[in-house]
Length: 67
Image 1 (cartoon, rainbow, N blue to C red):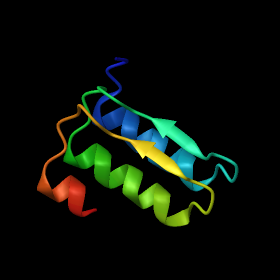
Image 2 (cartoon, one colour):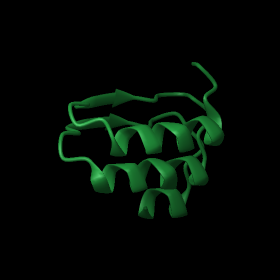
Image 3 (cartoon, rainbow, N blue to C red):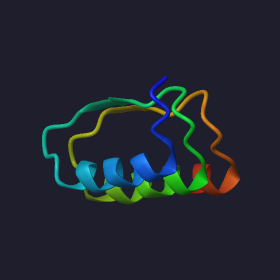
């Protein structure tokens, strides 16, 4: 666990959008909530390379899952 949290996930979401070769991202157990999941989802919309994303063991609720 790194404890990245939602603020860190916002930065990661921005980075995903500009990382053309990123294929795997494991954010297991990092205290992410809905805001963090939504930020990552926004980054994924611009990503063409992401193949695997793990957000298990976080505090993502219905809103984050829907993103």
